[in-house]
Image (cartoon, rainbow over all chains, first blue to last red; front, side, top):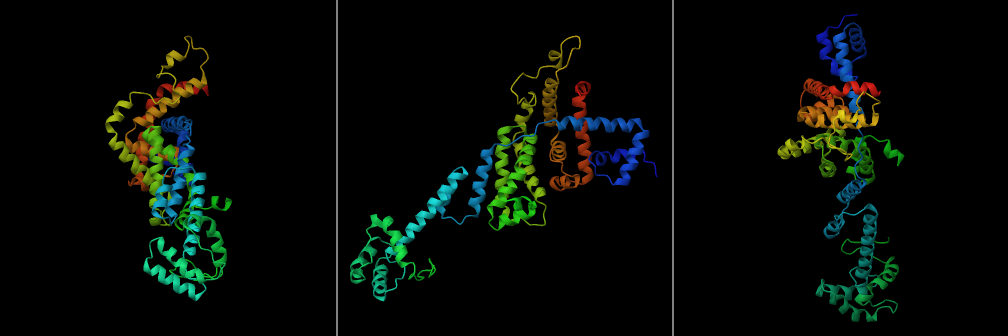
Amino acid sequence: MTRMECTQVDDLLMDYLYQELAPEQETEFRAHLDSCDRCAREVRELQGVREAVRELPVLEPPKALTAQLLHQAAAAKQPAFPWLRSLWELLQPRRTFYAVAAAASLVVVLFVGYAMQKGRFKLAFPAEERAVAEATTAAPATPTAPAAAAPARAAAPADEAKPAPGAKAALGGEALDRTANTLVETDGKLAAGK
Amino acid sequence: MSALRDESDEALMERYQKGEVRAFEVLIGRHRGPVYNFLYRYVNNQAQAEDLLQEVFLRVIKGSDAYQRNAKFTTWLYTIARNLCVDAARRQKHRRAASLDQPIDKSGEGDGANLGDVIPHGGAAVDRQVIGKELGGRIEQAIGQLVEEQREVFIMREILNMPFKEIAEVTKVPENTVKSRMRYALEKLREELAEYADLAEAVR
């Protein structure tokens, strides 16, 4: 076994201290320490510093920080509407985040129901289709356009409801049930038969 | 959930890239503590460490799309953390000089009383807890007084137990440079703590 010199030991001191030496090197290193007081003392003193440092407390970051980060992490992967996203960007605990997400989903569902009521989606009956198409092309964006379609749909089956804007919430669900099976894709917003 | 916990950092990042937020939650749980300790030991300021912690993970989130699986996650993570600390320290150069005069005192007690005040004359029983607190404060101060390039290596090696090779990748210097900086750091601390060495022995 080759004897290690003090200079070599000096070079490898950090590797030894942090257990990054190969096994054979470590054996030689220890052998040198056994017979060299100077190197042995150096190792012992630096080990002492390490042990003192090890007594430092391990700190815990506040839990609230994690909640905020998860919020951001989720928001980064959510394809949200811009206005919804800025709402979510308010610092909220996770519970509230999911509650808001659920509420937002409900609003979307109700809006879809309302939109279906107002004839934005193709209906099963051709007569209705034409009436709705005429009404919506006339003034597609305004709320009064769907109302104009209402008289045209008066001849439609009696069970078709005529919603007032204020009642959209109550009737939205009803319209969904009735048209669920007959819904056809219009502007690509909903798939058929679901 | 236990399945996610067994996954590597790199696998979890891949999952998050694909939209699995739960995977990112596991990553945060795993690394928030060590990152926070790194930051706190680096800047020695609790409020600042908390701000930096947020910033580190926000950058991970923002950079998640570009993350490559073959890159070691912790190397990337601590490169971000370290760069933020370097920037923060650069901005605080003036404040740092003033704060070094005060011993960092988390317990809120005392103003750095000397050991002479603590130990009764005649060398009676030495209170281990008191020594421990004093020593801890002294160590924190000594780490804070290391030059930045030594302090960052010291914190990564001692607090994070990061291998020298990885420290070299984070700090972008050769491994041998890392080891000599570590050596200087340990020797400086030995100097600072010399007066406590005998007492530490006595209370062991």
